[in-house]
Amino acid sequence: MNVEFARNFLLWCAVINYGVLLVWFLFFMFAHDWMQRLHGRWFRISADQFDAIHYAAMAIYKIGILLFNLVPLAVLYIIS
Image (cartoon, rainbow, N blue to C red; front, side, top):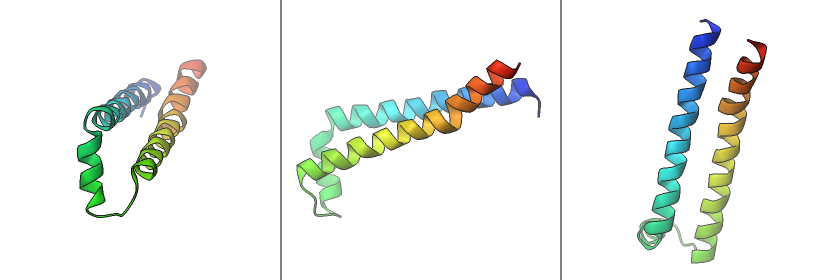
């Protein structure tokens, strides 16, 4: 595997992961009630708990994208 392949791979991974995060955010904003009813069938959580869980999960997912995609990508651009 060469550096160019690794850079392209990490770049596309970041793009796809941010796309997933954007879709998740859009569902959370525009289909909030539907998502809460769907998850409410399985778990007994309040609306505030539901919002806090999704907000925290989105933050953790974003940190994961930064740590596992963007930082290695930046390192590869710096070393080459």
